[in-house]
Length: 382
Image 1: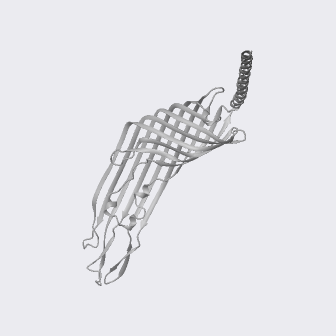
Image 2: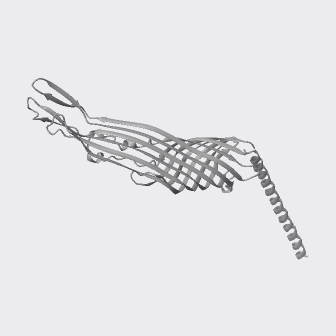
Image 3: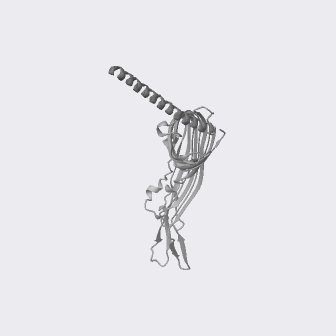
C-alpha cells in the first residue's frame, strides 16, 4: 500500500515539474517574442538610405623629395642660408583640408548594404623666403672724390606647390550584427572596387650671393684706393610633376557599438573601421632642374672679372605600370538621435609605393593621408 502511495506522489511531482518547465519555456518564448517584435518594429522604422558629408584636417605625405642645390654644401655657414634654408622652404604645409561624401542603401528586410563614397582634397601654396645680411660699405677714394658703395649677401627662394588626391569606392556588404555587445550594434563586411588618383606639382627658383668679400687696391690705408668685390652668385631652378592613377578590388570592415542611450532619445556609439585594397595603375613623373654658378674675381682690375664656374642640368622621367597596396582605418564616436548622426574621430589611409618622389632617379614613395575628421549623416526612408 505504501509503495502504491509513493508511486502516486512521484507521478504528481513529475507532472508538477513538467508543468513548471513548460510554463517557464512559454514565458521565455513570450518575452523573447516581444523583444523580437520590438526589434522588428525598430528595424522597420530604420532609414533605408543614409547620406553622409564630412571634412578632415589631414596631413598629406609623399609629395616628393626637395631640390637640393649643390652650392648649399659649399656654404654651410652663410647667414643668408639660415634659419630657413632653401631646402626647408620647399616643405609642404603640415596640414590640408579634405572633404568626403557617402551614400548608403540598405533594402528593407535585408542585411545587405550598398554604398558609394568619395574622399578628395586639394591644396596650393606659395612660399617666398628672402634673407639679406647687414649692408657692407666699401669706400672708393681718388684724388678728386670719395664714393661710398653699399652691398650685401642675399638668398631669395620662391616655391610654388600644388597637390590633389581623390579616392572613390563602390561597395556591397552584409551586416552580421554584434550580438555579443547587445542590440543596436553593427558589423558590416564589404567588398567592392576602389579608384584612386594623386597628383602633385612643384616649381622653385633660388638666387643667392652667400660669400661677398671686400678688399682694397693697393691697400685699405692708401689715400687713393679702390674696393674690389669677390663673390659667387648662384641660380638654381626646377619643376617636378608627379601622378598616379589606379583601380582595384577592395575589402572593408565597419563596426559600431552603442554604449549609452538609445536612437530615439539620443545614443552614443563607438565606431571603427579598416580597409584594404590592391590598385593597378600608372605612375608618372617628369622632373627637370638646372644650376649655374659665377664668380667675380677682380684680380687688380677695377672693372672686375666675372666668369662661369659651372653649369649643369638634371632630372628624370617615369611612365610605368605600378601595383600599389593600400591599407587604412579609422576610430571615433558618434551621437545619434533618430535619423540624424554626428561623428568625430581619426582616420588614416596609406598607399605604398604610389608615387615616384625622386629627383635625378626614380624613387618609390608612400602616399598617406591622416588626421582628425568630423561628419554629419541624415537617414531617409523607412
